[in-house]
Image (cartoon, rainbow, N blue to C red; front, top):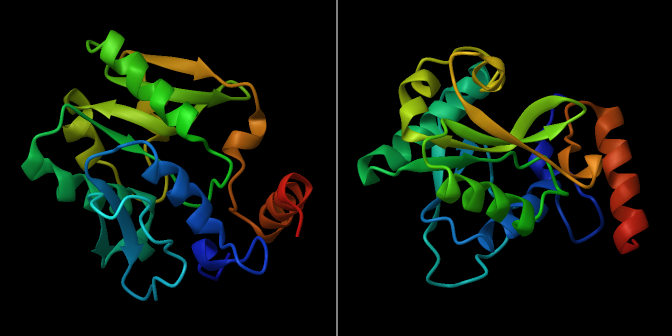
Length: 192
């Protein structure tokens, strides 16, 4: 889009990125890593809901090279903690919910042998998604701007895809037109 999507205003007080991040804050993700570009002024970041929350920003100097670089940067930030899994969500998806993310986590806890648990919209698995540590090497090997879509489509990995009640959850601002639709939905739901 040529601009910082996360800083775009849904309303006078609310930025696109702050909405998804506020929902993720409620999910008790430990830690919650927010991957940002080197030139991000961070003005869109809302205060953490819980003062003791372990949310932190991770500056990705190569984020401009594609989504896979940001993904790798976030993963590298948590690897020293040796997590069993990571949740990947996009800050330009303002309609994701705490319930949706918690459902991914609960499904994985019930089926830890799975490589991933992902959301599905229009037949395609997409973020937010949870990736088991078995996929960390594959995530590290991603390149370009395709993110983890190839992993979610690969027959080499086993996963669970969860249907959602609303396709609105997965709206993201890849174009100005997408943002216009998101802003329209936001106003319909929340007023100006």
